[in-house]
Structure formats: C-alpha cells, structure tokens
Length: 353
Image 1 (cartoon, rainbow, N blue to C red):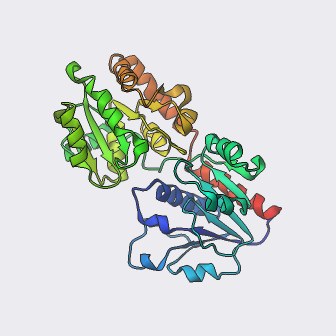
Image 2: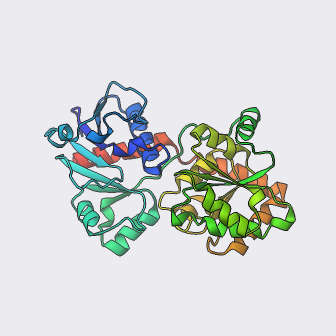
Image 3: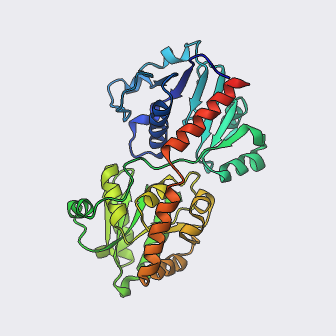
C-alpha cells in the first residue's frame, strides 16, 4: 500500500485550446483527481511559450501546483508518476513510473511513440478498441493496457427549454434542426458525406442542418459544398461556441448525427448523449462500442443509409423519445468521478509494484 504523500506530474500544454478534445479530457481528469484525492500533490506544467496565455485550468485546489517553466518540471527528481495524457512530448521528466494515455491511433502512431509507450509502466486506452489495436497491431502486452472510458464535462446535461431557446435565438436558429459537431478540417469527421446525405432529404422539408465546427472558420468551404448540393439555405455553420451553448443546442436538436470515419474515444458522442439527444452514429471504433444498441448505427461512408436513418427518426416521435431516454441512460455509465477514480487506481497500482 502507498502510505506516503506522492507527487504526480501531468503534462498540460494542451490546456490552452478549449475546443480540443485532448484539452477537455486533461482538464476533466485533473479536476476529477483533485476532487477525489486530497492527500497527494498534482503538478501541471506548461512550456515557456504559454507564459502569458490563459490556461483553461481555472480552478484552485490546495494540492494542485501549476508550473510555467518546463525545466522546473524536467529536473524535478521527486516525481513519483509522470502522466502524459496524449501529447506525447519528446522530452520527458524523470519519474519513478510513467503512464501514457492513448485516445486515438489513426494517423498519430509511429515508431517513436511506440518506443515511448514500451518504456511506460501502464498505457491508459480510451476504449477497448484502442486496447485491441495496440495488442494486435503493435504487439503490446495486454496486461500493460488499462481501459478507462472518458466522460462529458458536467455542463453537458439536458438544458431547460427556456435556456435552450435563448441559445437558438442567439445563433438565429429559427427552425427545428439536425446537429453535428466536429472539426471540418479533419477528414475523420466526414462532413461531405453528411452534407450529401442531407441533400437526399431536400424535397421532404427536413429540419435544418446545423454544423458546429470546433476549429476555425470554414464557412466558405461548407457553403461551397452546400451550394453545389442545392441545400445552402438549410445549412448553418457555427464556430467558437461555449460548452454551455453547445449543451443547449444538443438539448434542443431533433437528431445528433456523428458520421465519423474513426473515433478512438467518442467523447463528442458522450456529450450529446448526456444532453439527451437522439443519436445516429457510425458503426465503427469507439462510437459503436459506446453507443451499442442505444443509438441508430449506420455506415458513415454511405450517404443513402445516413439519410434513411434520419428519415426513420423524423417519422417516429416514439422512436425519437426512446432514443432520448437511451442516450441519458447510456451517459449515466460514463462519469467524470468514475474516470478519475479508475485513473487514480492505476496510479496506485503502478506505485505498489
């Protein structure tokens, strides 16, 4: 057993990009750990370039220390654990044990990262799918990999109708709408296929399609595609939304569609489910693993199948309400407290051996 107070270092450069999935995971993890563990010290470091930038780590705990200079962290000889939550820094501080989180594998894995992981005590995988890939394709020992599912931020809960309607007014959303969230410049989000599938519905007076683009302003590109498909008047592109506003729109949407080609953690799906949105999801990776029978699963490469899934929900109020209930029931199994507790137990196991 661990009886003494120990020091856990967490790499925090990602905490300067609020729209980034890695930053949200890291923020939620640190906050959760500080809430359940009042004895040990957590040290978060940034690089010198972040000296005058504002971190999203906006809470204070007596056992949380934030260091602005990497060299302070690098030469700290007393770290018991160093946890890289997914940044895969090339220069690592000394620590008795090193732990790395792998949230995605597509286009992000190479020999250098494999070597880093081989020298770690444990690997935290965000889904069983990632664990299976690491074992099958990269020959990692199964016992080295621990699965810890992520969870939506506490603000992602069903919002009161009056508050949600204010958000609709704020963004000039005047009609019922279908919603999707992602980054347009990331191929995995598969926006073109979604726009094409929506175009199959254009003569059926469907709800509008609202696209929340987390990274940057790609309105011109989206409008270009929408105009070509003759759906421009029914497509709205939004950027730079707060988590609260996203929760409002997720609470109010007719359907949340997630046609991603790959997702190793399905955090956006958990956010939508936590707000009670009826879900259409890709039938692959962590999305299928988490949604299971509690959403309509479809082939993300087939626009006709996506369109048919949308029709199916729009034509049945009973099905839509059933999917809303299933979303809330599913999300209740994925909590920040559970994520933090399971991670903390991995820290303890690492130091007990």
